Structures are given as C-alpha cells and as structure tokens.
Amino acid sequence: MRFLHIADLHLGKQMNDVSLLPDQEYILQQIVSIADRERVDAVLIAGDVYQRSSPQADAMELFDCFVSQLVSQGRKVFIISGNHDSAQRISYFSSLIKASGVYVTEAFEGKLQRVTLQDPSGDIVIWMLPFLRPSSVKRWLPEEKIVTYQDAVEAVLRQTAVDTKKRNILLCHQFITGSETSDSEERAVGGLDNIDASVFDDFDYVALGHIHKPQKVLRDTLRYAGSPLKYSFSEAVHKKSVTIVDMDAKDDVVVRTAPLYPLHDVRLLEGTMRELMSQPYSEDYLWITIHDELPAPDARVTMSTNYPNMMKFSVVNSKTKMDMDVLATQSMENKTITDLFSDFYRLQNNDQDLTDAHRKVIDKVLKEMEENA
Image (cartoon, rainbow, N blue to C red; front, side, top):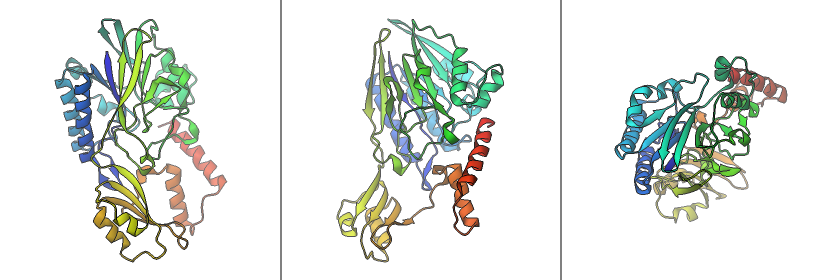
C-alpha cells in the first residue's frame, strides 16, 4: 500500500503581512497531481491544517477543495489536528465524512482513534494522535503522573493495545528530541514539549508534523514531512517535498520524497546595489541585504523595481554594521512570547533589556500557563 505524507499546511498564514493563500492553493494543486501520478492509496495529513484555531472562510474553502479532489480520485484521507488547529473545528462532521473515506481525529477523550486498512499482505492499522498537551491528558487519565509532553504521550500509548505483529502507522504532531527547527514553529518554554523517539518503537512508520524542515529522526520511518512552503526566512535553505511511503510486508517499508516547486520562492539575497540590480527580475519573496558604503537615499525603491515582492531590506557596511529597514511590520507570529514581552519591556524602560531574574520569572509563569492551557 502506498501513502503520501504531508503536514503543516498552515492555510491562511501570512508572511510579513502578505497573504500566502494563492501560494498555498498553487502548492496544494501540485500535491494533488503528485498523489495522482504516484497512484497513492491514502494521504496522511499530520496536523496544523490551518494557521489559526479560528480559520478564515477562504482557508477552509481551500482545504475543502483539496480534500474533495483527493477523495474524487478514490483516495482515503487521514487528518489529525495540530497545535495551531482547533480540535473541535477540525473534527466537525468527522462521523459523517467517514463514509467518504476521510478520517479526522475527534476531540481527545483519553484514547487513540484507529482505522484498519487491508491489502494483500494483511492489515495496516492507522493510529491517529492529535496534538496533546499534558493538561488535556490529565483530564482523562487522572491516575497517571503527567508533567511533560513525553509523560502525556507515554500515558496515552500505555492505554493503546498495539499489535506489533501487524503493520502500524501513527500520525503524530509533536516535537521529537533531536529534530531541526526553524523560526516559524511554536515551542513550549524550557523544552517541556520534547519527546524521545523511543516512545514510538512499536510503530512501523510514524508520520510526523510540527517541524517545518523535512527530515528523519534517528530512523527513516520516523519522519517529519515538513511544511509544503517556506514560512519564514530561516527556512530559505529548506528543500520542500512530500513524503511517499511504500508499505508491503511487515518490516518492508520504503520511504522517499517528491520535490515541491512553489509559486514564489523565499530567498536571501546579498551584494552591492549594482550586483543585485544586474540580476534577472524576480517575484520571489526576498530579504535583500546591500553592502554599499554609500547607498542612495532611494535604494529601497530602486531595488523594488527589480524585486517587487521584497519583504525585508537591510544595509550592512562599516558604518551601520547591521542597519535593518523592514518594508512591512515584522510579523509577531514568528516571535516567542518571551521575545514579545522583552520588546514591550524595552519600550517601557528606556531600551533596557530584561535581566536573567526577569526571564526566570517569565519562563516560570509561561510554563504554568502551558501546563494549564
């Protein structure tokens, strides 16, 4: 049986106040084409379908169109909620749409949902683990000692009767220790959300979401599909893709990727004004840094004639060292809560930064809020 694994669509996301919906529509059509070309049996969507827990109507319409196209091709679709999603909204109509071959995690009530598929080699059990916080697991498993995210996931898996003689696939949206992150992901304070990879040893393939860089974690079959688009300049060097999983007999799993090609790339450009203006016209989303000692007053305007989708503009030379001129207000969604509080503190205290004592207090409060979210 062949699966296509994707995650972190973040439909409705903006980057530096620019809506990425046209880019997302373009890349989803590409994914539909790959699913058709590869003749996949099912698509695994490992969380963060939307950017916000209350998604806008056009983002929901786009996702509806995407899933409908996959179903019309005769493919099953499995969807879990991520930390950006509302589990209740994602699961709306979940019971009804099962008849169409679309399986969505319902509101968590202490146990994993599962769906069993069959092929000539026997059963394949699809387990669906939505994004979990310790507080949400404590509610349903009060007898368990749960402090960290690992405690929460381990507690749930202890309640799960996984038959390791069968082939088992887990959809999961969590942070696995050792994975490589970027600026556009939300993390819990103090590493509270770290989960050790050994927790998932009973599963033949773990379809992960949450981290935006495609990567394996320790083994080929424990894998983040990554986001289909670059959602911050820290992702400029990423090679985006979808993951294709061929599962035959037990322990016979082959994992490969198919590249994705965006409508607009996200790139970093550096050089002198002359060098950059001599390059071909580009509508990519760019952060441009010039190194001229005496840049013209209208350098930013001049540069935008060749790069109309320039999002950030910086001047770096012997005088400025690092003088950044941001075209659009830097999006707050790419800053941590501590960073935002630090910005506010500097504004109120003559540009003085937080002390270590301040940061410890903030981290303590944020941990308590995270645990009781």
